Length: 256
Image (tube, rainbow, N blue to C red; front, side, top):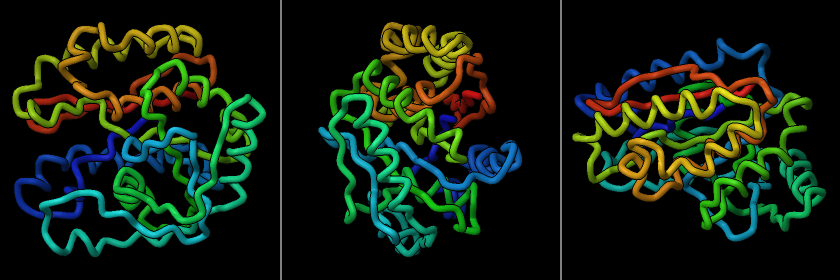
């Protein structure tokens, strides 16, 4: 699935910032109830970690990376003590190697807020092992769809593959982004309602979609969607949630 990770630590704040993201928080809290079973582990593809070699966190107890700024001091004390799973990192790396990709398991890298913030809302008990995955700085849609395809066997092993990003991420125009985000989300619903090959073809041209470039001046928050779609089956993707942050639309999609 592809989910919005919110705005920094907003889910754990008070006042207007909390109110803006309440709809998103409510959705994330509902996600576990939509799953057929509790995942054995979670592979979290994060928009906030870019590496030239596809990488996975390999530590047993990854540290948290508070990669946001200007927030209240208490938001830098948030904890999410879920375990890492070195065996899953090694398994994911092996699948990419089998598909012909270079790969790295980083035993020292931690979890950025694209990982621990949504997971703390979705699975507050922090008892499901987590491995984070980077994206490639080329931001190539086809590459990331193929990486997802190579990892799809993990689903048969009880691993929940999650793309963590934001379907609208124009921070300079967030308050005025309603029309563009509405157009783009309508396009995404149609583009993702196909089999895997159809989704890949359409996602390769997302930047020409109505509202696409206006929604993502830089597409790093779109790229986890490509991995999630690639890891999905040939069943049509479907939107599992639609919400707002102020006037802008956000969405989440699942690939059964």
